[in-house]
Image (cartoon, rainbow, N blue to C red; front, side):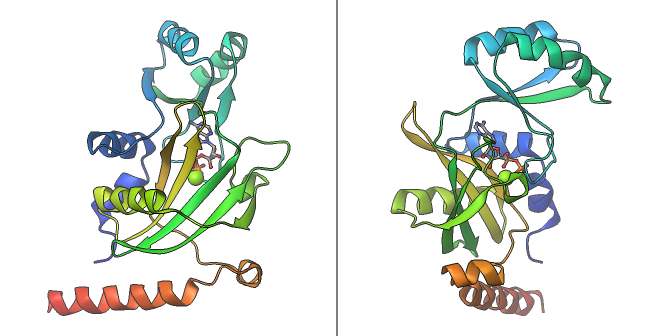
Length: 215
Ligand SMILES: Nc1ncnc2c1ncn2[C@@H]1O[C@H](COP(=O)(O)OP(=O)(O)O)[C@@H](O)[C@H]1O
Ligand SMILES: [Mg+2]
């Protein structure tokens, strides 16, 4: 089976993924899981972190992510957060980055390709669904190593690993491991993202190997 249920379920859960990555020495954003009644704790956290991001644990496309810039914003947001039927809030330290990311495609533990995404001028999220745009970008060895390690740690055979560069700490941080990463669209292929064929070949090889083993 490709991307076993366990590994896929893991990548669908941001909190759990961060925990597993961290336990394996991969840098992720600092995070906290906060009980809904513990507004006091959230206030302590924002004082320490300065800015934070509230994340639905299973969202995608930047949907529902909220940047909390200061205590006033937090106070304003608390009633809305409390209205949601959630027992816990997942918050992350806001990482000072240049509003661009690296998407690294990995199949079967091997590097397939890299591209970048840039947030629009009016948003801090790089997701295309949040107005971000895709651009050609080379990965370096460090980024590729981190992405392979992240995919292996999560146990996913096919992965799209999102990485940003923390300007304060001067280090790469894994934001997310996606279990269903997309292929390049025709427009993106025209731009020069040319790894679709290689990706398909690698997935076919992987399926061949796995089905042989299962027989
Ligand atoms: N801790 C953070 N600090 C700064 N920017 C972040 C942080 N977390 C997410 N982002 C921005 O928001 C985008 C979406 O976050 P992500 O965790 O990947 O959620 P989604 O599953 O919705 O794509 C990222 O691509 C990045 O641009
Ligand atoms: Mg993402």
